Image 1 (cartoon, rainbow, N blue to C red):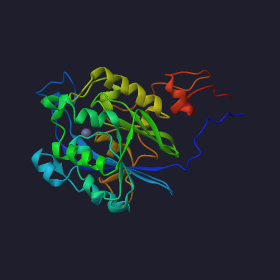
Image 2 (tube, rainbow, N blue to C red; image 1 turned 135 degrees about the vertical axis):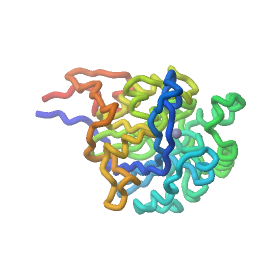
Image 3 (tube, protein in one colour; image 1 turned 90 degrees about the horizontal axis):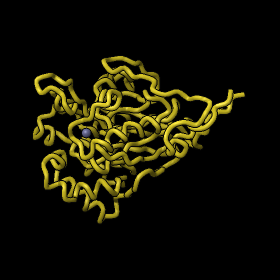
Image 4 (spheres, helix red, strand yellow; image 1 turned 90 degrees about the vertical axis):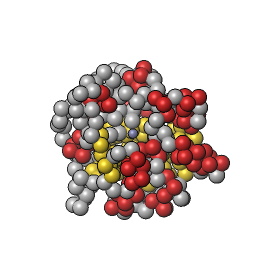
Length: 307
Ligand SMILES: [Zn+2]
């Protein structure tokens, strides 16, 4: 008899990554200690969509063409246009998760007039606090966007979370920190199990899999602890999706015939590959394992599996 792992009473979500921009990077821009002379491989920029019959969530809102010009990123399409290709009208979206307030995750949020924004308490405190007087911590924020989000707080449009919070059956946010003090990841129930959108808790597969921290960081220890937490939240290591890795576009199938290079579906078959092909780092055994919060947030990976 198989004791099936506990699953939420949730309809699985479809999950998509929509690519909207890209930039070339040096190794030292992707990894602490990387060689500044060595090419580091590009970063892609994504927003994500999770939907089932009852709920639609947009995760992050990307940046626009003006910001791309200012920061010298190659702008491929508006994230809003990318969502439209998947049948989602930004004007009617009711829930947007903002993983953190960096310019490449929160620009365009004015294009979601019906949305409330899900944000960690600590992210707002960090983005309006003492460390923003220091370039290292402040450079990836746009003051006007942070101020606009403060205005949204006063307009009653921000739903704050403190740590881990279930927003809908099968959909939760989890404070990670590290990259910014209030960064959150998203955990989503899908037909292949629990999928985790790491956002910038791991820009690239290599950051988390090879334990190489990304250089834009508030707290390196918290970042490293975050890699562990991401894994504990996902049904399998390959279900942790990094925030900026071009390999995501190679590993997952296009979301439709006209969406090649634009959007991929993450809750389906994937192929390992590339320099940092995923490694199964842990297996389910006959005894409880992992950190304490595993039982709370990953019941399917906690406890005894009898066969
Ligand atoms: Zn980012």
